[in-house]
Amino acid sequence: MTTAEAIRQPRGGAFAALTSRNYRIYLGGQSLANTGSWMQSIAQDWLVFTLTHSSTCVGVTMALQYLPILALGLHAGGVADRLPKRRILLTTGTLNAVATAALAVITIAGAVRPAEVYAFAFASGLVFAFDAPARQAFVAEVVPAGRLRAAIALNSAVFQSTRLIGPAAATVLIASVGTGWVFAVNAACYIGPLIGLLRLRPSDLVPAPAAPRESGALRTTARYLRRHPDVVRTIFLVAMFGTFGLNFPIVLTAMAKSTFHGDAGTYGLFNIILAIGSAAGALLAGAAAHPRTRVIVASAAAFGLLEAAAAIAPGMAVFLILLAGMGFTNLAFQSMANASVQLAVDPQLRGRVMGLYMLGFIGGTPIGAPVIGALTTQFGPRAGMSVCGVIPALAAILMVAASARARRPRHRNAALPSTGQ
Image 1 (tube, one colour):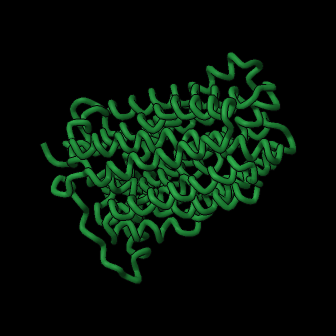
Image 2 (cartoon, helix red, strand yellow):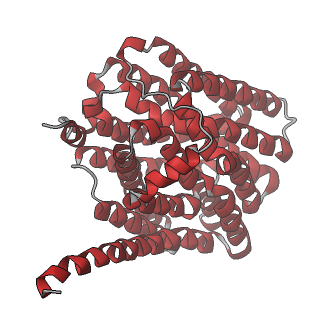
Image 3 (spheres, rainbow, N blue to C red):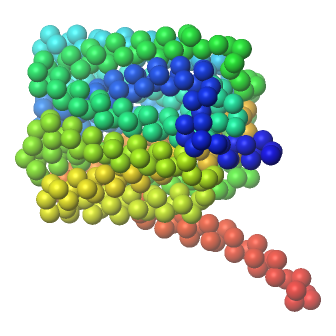
């Protein structure tokens, strides 16, 4: 079996990656950090909505949080290719812990205002811009090549499984002791991955060759992507998906409070239902064969249609069923798209390409979130959620059309010799 075949056909599905000691340690630390992050996401969104009573302000908070990756995503990917990724992750984890602890202190003291939350969102986004491409590429250094796709899928599954615990814990803490203590717990959760990173055996890591500092690094990446149009089309679909489809904090907070007349517990329930479907979707993607483009596109289209249907759901029961379906197709798409891009690129360029991937996936949020927030505020949460679903479905149709158009000239040229011309 060739190396490529080993990468594409891991035995044991998504759980095959657990045979690596380094990966088990890394995954354990990340599980704790992810739980804290989901807790913070619930608390931050609810805090902003409580302080301002505005979906537009929730959208502004998301925009500030993801604006840095829009501005720095490609540069941060180059940094991930040049510097040791574990060192980057240790630095970003420490900075996140300090910033979150500061927000916890002022929130517990009762001095928090929207401006402080906006500043925190921007600061954490700045750290995330450098953390995300390094973290995406670091997985390939923690596991053997034959377990990479399994590790990517298991990362997604565990990330979403922590979504079951995080929102539930956040809801209990918000109701019992207040939002500030959610931030305090999240600050403590960053200790887990920092310890995990320090415990990794350097001799078992498989670092990619460090890319040299060069002025034409972005041109090199662009030339590489021109030779791989399937990767470009996948990144485009991911960008539309992330920019518009995943504005859950905006539409679900408004759906919980305005449409279904609930509270923070209702919003937490929505996130738990999404997580149940998401974990199943990620595990299915990890157990499947090498992801095919048509399956990736179909899962994106299905997610969009389910979200549009959820926007007009007549009652809570139907809405929750559709949320579970959205979670399933969401993570199936994310896992397969991420794996297909990581497996297609050269290791020396993985940081830069994944920086571009994250730029598309998250960097569009500063554009999409305020738009969806304004639509939700002006026309209601059902209208905002409908737009969130329709755009990814249309993007999937465009990707099918682009792929068909790209294949057509080759078929036409291949037919010429048989005509005798």
